[in-house]
Image 1 (spheres, rainbow, N blue to C red):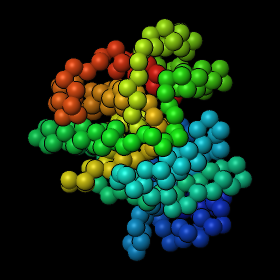
Image 2 (image 1 turned 135 degrees about the vertical axis):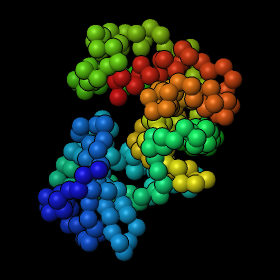
Image 3 (image 1 turned 90 degrees about the vertical axis):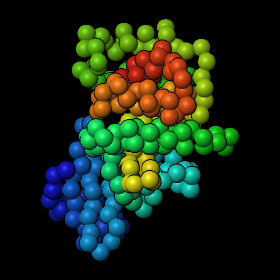
Length: 264
């Protein structure tokens, strides 16, 4: 995080928001998304907050994250929405801070078994949420339609592909060709990677819910598989899946949902 200049960041904020966060100092939070602006608001007198603000994007507006957070607020340890406004074409979403450390920050080999097990436990908690009254549908038909639309609108970053020799069109054709026959539908986080899992002793929290909804459980299993490999190494995969409750993970689905993520 880098200290940001409060006047620069606060100048064009909505009046109600400026009043709400008066007295806070801010730190800019680095994200993997170039168009995403996130700052941490710090106060010695009030609980810390996080503010997300972006130009309105009809493909994935911040309002979608607010709606999902409001739906799961009493089901999991997630940020509480403090304020939302679309102001002059800019969306502002103010969230409470979840205390703890994101799972990617743990580096001591001795504590990693405990952290990996907690990440698996956390995913079970998410997947056990009932979906009968969930209106957020991320099943494959919808996800592939979104991927196609993003590709046609030039929103897919080909330079960030795992295989830089492939074009978006080639990967999309593979996405269609290798689509799984069946979906094991549960409520999913949508981007279940280690930085989005917050550990605070025995408590587990979760952030970044913009992609949440009904999908195959491998949507989450694939991305945490990739995240574990990136942050801790492949040797932790077996422990994670055993703790989650899967003896023989479906590697075809893991590779498929990692491929799907290239479009988002």
